[in-house]
Image 1 (cartoon, rainbow, N blue to C red):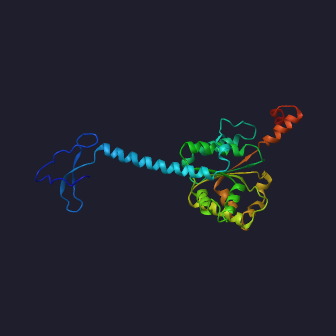
Image 2: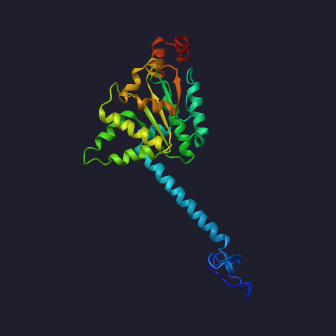
Length: 282
């Protein structure tokens, strides 16, 4: 409201005031004074002014979102290669159907899934990274801030922050991993053994994102046997708590497709098509 105007019991409605922007009369309303309870006529903000303020608010909101997205993209690994990965460019192969459906479903229902993530595992080179990156790119188009990072790159960059000359700080990387709308953690558990610092990095990110109610999409080359073994849970901590926290917050999908790079090389060596080789070995 622009002013408390006049008491209606004395002078009635005030004269209209024209908006300096659109030239139209500003609305006039009769309201109660919050303290005295007396009714007064007031000049209200012009609809064009309200629209302008709402547009400015939305523009600021979008600017913050764009800055956040740009920040996540800078943290992401091999961004130029990742941006070219789409669902359309993915070559559908036997064994990838459930993975593709799981990722597309997570994209379509991202707003309603809360912190529910994905844990996609299976043989190396069978399309896990391509499909999760494709899903991440779809979400970036929708305005979400997504970070895609390989485990080795993440550990390397966090370790590098111990050097005071490093361009990235520990908190910058860690905050990006926790604040992103989605984190795609590629090649999870790619190391046979994890040192104390690496275990701590994993716990901080997993715990931080769980508290922030934000999902992680993991891809991992662990085998079906390794995934179901009792020993895998103790790779992350002596109690197995971090592993079960990850699994409890994820839809787990075994990608049964074969190693595409291996299939391509073997098909070439045998002088047959990739489909023929994979059908022979499926």
